[in-house]
Amino acid sequence: MNEQSTALPLDDGMTKDRGGFSLVLGGPLFQLLIAAHLSDDALHVVHRRIIAFVLLAWLPLLVLSFVGGQALAGSVAVPFVRDVEVHARFLVALPLLVIAELMVHQRMRPIVAQFLKRRLIPENAVASFNAALGSAMRLRNSVLVEVAIIAVVYVVGVIAWRRYMSLDAATWYATSSRESARLSLAGAWYCYVSLPLFQFLLIRWYFRILIWARFLYQVSRIKLVLIPSHPDRVGGLGFLAGTLQAFSPLAAAHGALLAGLIADRIFYLGATLPQFKFEIAAVVVFMLGLTLGPLLAFSSQLAAAKRSGGLEYGELAEDYVRAFHVKWLHGKPVDEPLVGSSDIQSLADLANSFEVVRSMRLVPFTRDGLVLMGATTLAPILPLALTMMPLDDILKALLGVLF
Image (tube, rainbow, N blue to C red; front, side):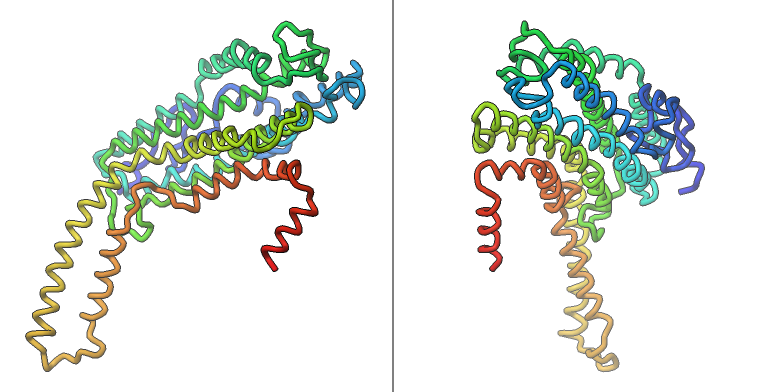
């Protein structure tokens, strides 16, 4: 495939190299961060963005809660310094959302280029592949979409939080969780600045994954050149499993959000960790669907490649083993020694290739990917097990298992 046929069109900030795709390198907020010297065109200086967002979302809450007298224990039922949920949201989940941008940019950029480098896209479909890339980048750069997200955050997100997510107790941000409750000064900043900022970043991530899923679906409509005997056992699409590591900070951020929400309800409302088993399972399933679901677009092509590969390699094996049988069991050539014959090795190689085809997976990820995403989501929740059993008892149980 020549360079001219695989070059990407120069459109909406796309570069002409094959690695020009980036899921996160665009949009009004990205341009604003560049203008403020909080980012560059490679998403470096990630620490600057983390510090800026924390200073905007968390630090005013600390200052205003001290000014209003809601910061320390004894002032309200849930003081700011002991509100696990707010600290988990802005000191753990928010930085993870920022870190995820850098990881997704660095790891997924070369992954997309593999479709062309591995010649999975036939010559006559390169234009369709480039069109899918261009469409994805136009959506990524859309001003209208980010404005719509802001509208959703303020019209739906804030109301939903006050009605369903806030604690039913006197807290540093309000006297109660009822919609008519009076917000404190810190609560007003939390409700109308900090929370919308976080929700905007989170919903923008969902939209980016929607772009990614749409792009993969469009690529899956192309008749890919899959090789059933490819050693990755997914016809050459094994590189797509690398997206799971890229999305791991996003999974950890969701786990931290849930951990903070559960912790507050355990500490202040008398709940127990087992009461949230369905919520925990739902978040894990949600993250698996969010990150692995888009890859299922290729299942039909993989199934077809496995069927056709089984037939084709079965015919090849049939021809070879019959010739082998006739030559060595009936012909018994005297001028060719059996020991060291290349026919024996070729038969073994053919058997290995047939086994690779037979064991082809219908999804371009492995069980390890499932475990990685599930474990990453659950990791921030695990410390809450200490609310059920003292640390000494946990350590003794672990030592008992090990020794």
